[in-house]
Length: 158
Image 1 (cartoon, rainbow, N blue to C red):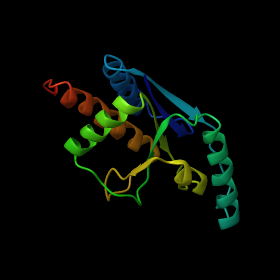
Image 2: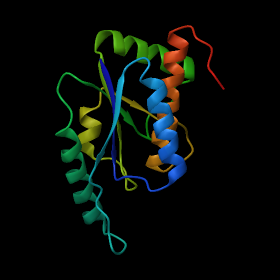
Image 3: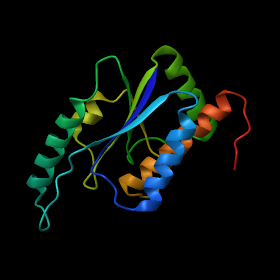
C-alpha cells in the first residue's frame, strides 16, 4: 500500500520543503509515501489561452504516464466539492482498504488538464480560498496525516 503525491514543478521555498519532509516522515508510519515532481512549463511572457491549453494537455499526459489503472486518484481541484476533516478521514480509510494505492494529483499554476479531470476517481477542493499548488500540497499532506491519526484513534499531536 502506497500513497503518492504528484505535482508539477518543484517549489523553491525552504519552509514548504521542510513541511513536506516533516509530513512525509509522519505519514510513513502508516503507509509508504512519496512526492513525485513532473515538468511544469514555464513561460517567458504572458501565455496565450492556446499556449496554456497546450501546456496543460502536455502536463496531463506526463502525469497520466505515472499513474496505473489500478490506482485511486484524488484530484485536488478548486472547482470541486469540499469535505470536512472527519469525512475526508472516512473517505481515505474506505479508499485505502479497498485500493491501497492512492495518488493525489495537483495541477500547475495555470490549472488542471481535462485529461486529469477525466481520470480522477474523486475530485476534492481544499477550500474556497486560492492557494498555490505548492501550498495545496502541504495542506493535503497535513490532512492525510491527520486522517491517519483519526482512523487509528490516536491523538493528533499539535
